[in-house]
Length: 240
Image (cartoon, rainbow, N blue to C red; front, side, top):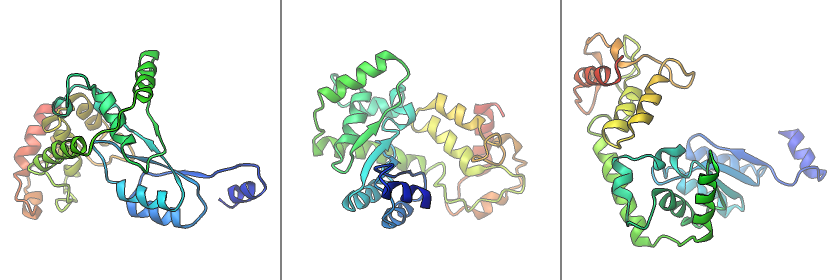
């Protein structure tokens, strides 16, 4: 870090940016150091957790670049939530996702992943004809997303009180994958996400099929969720 600061002082580089993937409060702490000029953070229709921190760092004078404006591609796939979010026949979900991000006055730039010329042309056309979302539209989007998130809590709130599982099953992560399928309709994404459990250093633990029905988790669950049955359902749906 000191080498970067020295290089900036010597005019070798103009700006220092940091990519952020943690707790939103930590973004504020990092920005408060005064070392950085730009932050790259996630923000989209499905995940507004960084919204307050983004406003905070923007007020400090940092540029705010957004990664995942289309939720890593989820918003381009047909699903329960994308159908609900289709506010008009003339609005594509890609259009809506980008307009939502740019409706935030604290956003400087959005980095949208593109895999072919068609997607490049679509994004350029959207930005060139950008029409800001109305506050009414933003409120309607928030209502739809929040209703689905509340529904997902019926299956698991992600409190982690059930952990650790004696058999090593990553119960919250298994249920998160099931919610992607059952509540949001991101079935293909759910299967890919599930396959990473135990095979990705950031997604440790075991899958639902490793549950031995000991019941230790249910005794600790404050929501009194029927975890053992739900794990059976998950193992049956994902196949392991």
